[in-house]
Length: 331
Figure 1: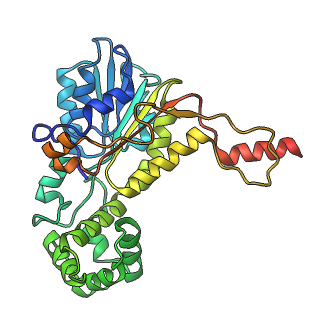
Figure 2: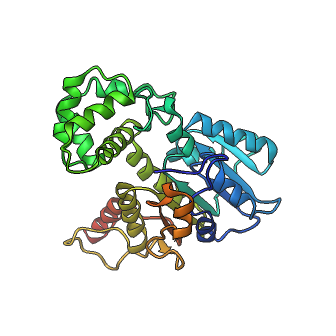
Figure 3: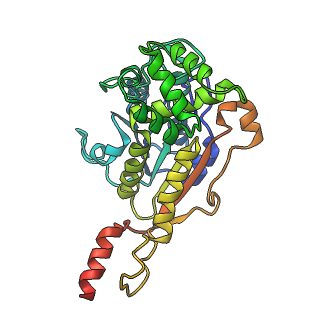
């Protein structure tokens, strides 16, 4: 659940990320989740003076960090916003369009500064406001939603995004304890609501994760971001993604399988041939790499990380569009 801090932590699986991208020293790359720039700095070290990097982050603190780095290194362009809008950022500069990137990398975990700064409200380990917004320009905070949502909606989010089996019990406890003002309030409610057969921190971690994912539409953003990143890549370019929990792992795995194996078409649809794959998995990465024991010992927050990567062979087909075209041809 963590990404690199600007100085406090090394970026997770940096060597593996650079390896997966097969860096062209003169190429153009996108860091879709800049954080505090650990992966960007590692990539810049591999690039020549002709190489370029676009750094994106929806968190204003991370964006300011990217801007500072861009002032010191002319190879970088920094953008503040969602990575699902990646295509918009490729042609909005005063110095012209950047073109199709050779590689796009995502590290979709929380950054250390986000977790460690109590005022952001992401951690149940320290008292702070119930905020949890990745982009503080957004209107909806965790507290506003928790204090307004119906029991059914609370339970659905906690069950779906936190995979917490006592979701309804927790939801009822939240409603009974309103108004909740701080992370401590939420932590205490969850601790009291969940039976004591396992550590309370497990339930707290799941509930905080669920609320954060919902408030920031993290899975929807990741789904759209993967499509945007793959679509932007030049043929032969690579997409590498670091995820930190099962919901993210599975979403990326499904999307990559769709590109590698082709869209799943209706069984009765008359097709003349199987669609050619849009991507191939990177041999050195396979279906996913985990951090080594040495890295986990150095940075325990890396323990849940999973790196997945593909190389683009051609533009991805839209399964519904392909089905419609095939159906029309058969008519």
